[in-house]
Length: 216
Image (tube, rainbow, N blue to C red):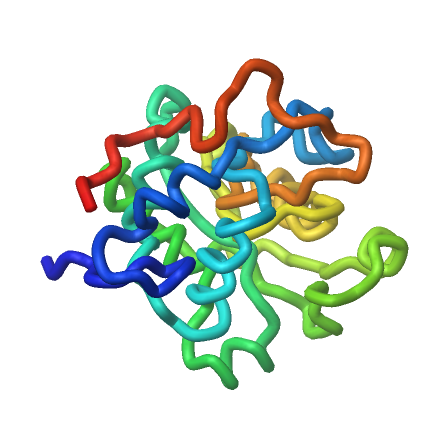
């Protein structure tokens, strides 16, 4: 396995994220779960370098930081008795244009660390993408997912998304998986702070870190 040679956030040679960007990363602010997304696990607060980390995976297929994100998410759900990992699929248009689904890339990396299978459990009904839409439109006209298969009742499924803003995408994914019989654990690489969200009290930037960062 080749080690990343440049930081996915600032493009500086070395570890990804580099020590400087790592120090600017923080956990999400303590906020209530979005409606319908109980027990949300999010690794990072979606601001500063976290935006670049996610964007370079999503839009440029630059995967230097996927392992780092997957390590962090896997550490948070390791005690949740996950049996399957899936993802909230992007639109067909985005997948065709980019040649991949960034949610699938991250989900498969997390599943490998948990030692469980990855399955495409959701089908996205074609409609407009959520990225760039106002929060009001996201909430009122979010994506629609249908389950691809029935699951044994009570199957514990981790569903992975990249960024939670209003929670509309994950809410639709969770609802579809529940209809299929799953007990759902929702997770995301990052969560957008609300305007009223405080920083995590008593938590210095970059903490908690869910795995040891390689030395730069």
